[in-house]
Length: 424
Image (cartoon, rainbow, N blue to C red; front, side, top):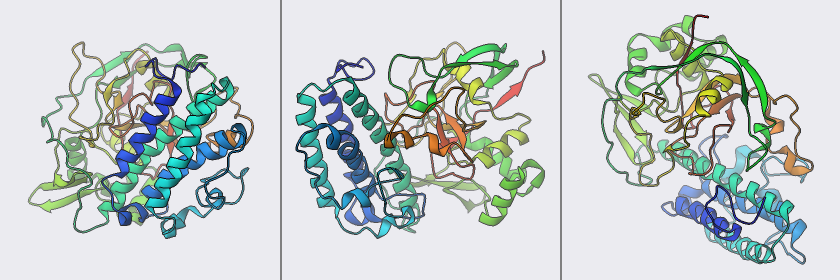
């Protein structure tokens, strides 16, 4: 890794660092101190906490070991803003992050400025490849938290009966996604996972071979209108469509539609977005679906979820562009067909559930030290999602990227693309 930055942009690490850090502040800017402190459920973290935790990451893993004479902004923050790094030490309980009323947003801003100044000093000294690799990891880590900050504040605001607007959005464009087609793949031996060059998280490696049976992948994701048809056909009340744990979750949580949907009566539905509540657009990708819902919808449609290897085998040949993060449009747009009939919006739009459990690849090794706790410790009771969403920052996602969440999670921007088997 060199000091030319990531993704071939020509930016120095110092410039890229400032760009990424500035986006975090742009995401926080529309929010009041009260907005930034609230925690609406244990899986959600306050915006203020995201801003401080991403700063703590650079202080703990980059500055402390590598910048001589560096003094932490406040040693107590090591406890408050550690997330899950047990090797670093004790940490504040995740479900109680919302009670951290102090430090306030002004103190968190001062903390970020303190660390940014020290990082500028470190990067000006032309640190070696090992340090730059940690900086790169820290930047991608912050991009992950940028998306989480948006999904989390959406959940926070959705709990308010006033349906507050986080940020006004451009009007939805188009209403009909058109019929889905199928992209056939002959199967056989394929390679998946990140290669040697360029940045990738440790869970994307090593690159390895997988045998696939012939399959087909839908050209677009399932739409809101198709989920409405599932609802109208009694989908949330038919246990035969659901995995056992999924059905138990539907019953326990009282699910009758995707998260943020509301039946307004008379056949009209609305959806809560980061631009407030508005009528549901049937052609838009269905989002905020859990793995359980995605699996049930696929079964109802006479299809199935793709494996992550199938998804990557198709995505590897596609350019990485699509409906990624745009602060003027924070909801997935209607998918547009590609000129060649290939897959639409494999990247961006919604994260796409796969049927694959989140497990280590053959030969996987966690990075040494505390930073090695980043991904490997979560390889149980989670499912893999692929492709990124409309809240994923550009330059952060790639064909080998593996996101992962528990099967009941649906506050993330998640949807489903169908797959099916082909005759041999």
